[in-house]
Image (cartoon, rainbow, N blue to C red; front, side, top):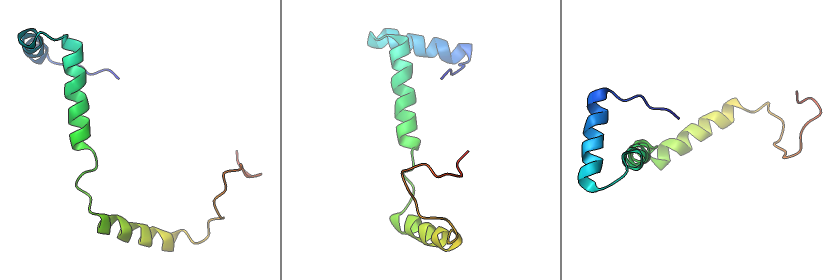
Length: 75
């Protein structure tokens, strides 16, 4: 994945990396990883998930049973 940073932000990250004695690329990788982890699905409540699954089950009644084997009509 490529992330384009403004020149100002790139300079700030380079200074921060230098202050910490770290490689700028490693610093950015860690920052992005932490952001993604924090932004991951953490605001869902288990009850909401269960309710949605129940609603979807009612809508998907005409589907054939799941199988790990490919079906004959698969394209």
